[in-house]
Length: 204
Image (spheres, rainbow, N blue to C red):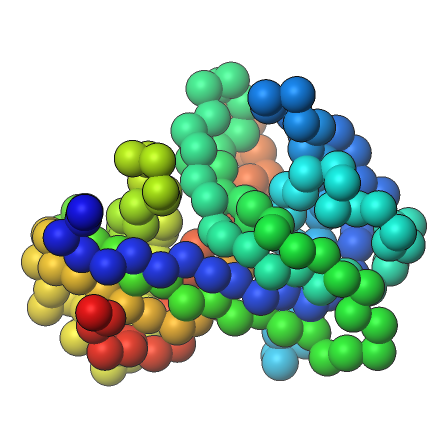
């Protein structure tokens, strides 16, 4: 038994930005990558990577622009290919639905343990922001290490926490484009992070 309770669930509704393609094969199961665009209230879009076992795709319309609902977990793995971001954040689907005519949705609930000291800072515009890494255990002894970000008064509350503290939050998974200089060349990159909307009471 782990000393801290762990929770990892995400619900998404959006649109496919391209047709699914094979991501990888594991234990004789083929997994597909479904790039999903989810609109924010501001009108901006988060472009997220959904990974699903091929049998989950059966019976769905999956051309570019098709609506899709996803229920699953947020997962991370270390990218050792040397290309792109070192930490890859994706959504592991447990169920897919067509979700036609529904509003876009992006909500998650996570509970885990802080595994690095929170970093509290101010933006050039004077907003307070706190960056954290949350470790959420899976069933089989593995853990996902999820980058989390909080703003304003929430950032101050998170900034007062210490490594090993349990954290239970509600929020959304968002994408953020940035450029990085590599060998003198600017490259476009995308970072994925959990934007914390509220802190929830600790679980059992």
